[in-house]
Image (cartoon, rainbow, N blue to C red):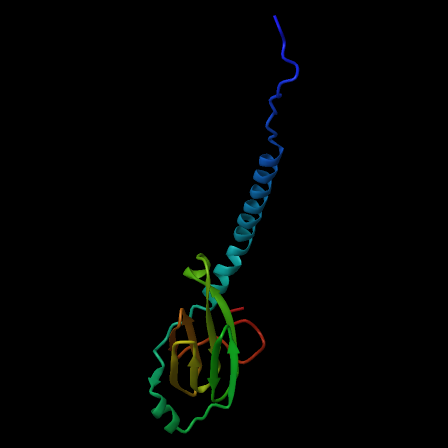
Length: 161
């Protein structure tokens, strides 16, 4: 019986690389899940604090806005949204969708006494008259809404805390 000692040997497949890749993926997934679980209660509390309801602000055309007595004295940009207000102070934050339980965020700003508001996104330009009280503007996917209510009083803190 002849033995062939010069032939090709079978190579054993190493499982080290797939195990390392699987371990790395598991660590990333565990980190992301842990981070989400850790931060979720805070995001829910923040969304609850920023949940403002009230009567809708009076929305007017650009021409009516230009003709009214309150002029925009302060402008600022937040998340590629330009806000203008006549008076007062403002506090803005990014709020997690679905009451802090979802994915993605939207922008919300509370004004203590703006008088008039101008909000411009890439696709929307909105004008609101707010009178002398507080107002809250919400911008979700270029949809702008405004209500005549808010918790922000002008101090340097997050509304609701």
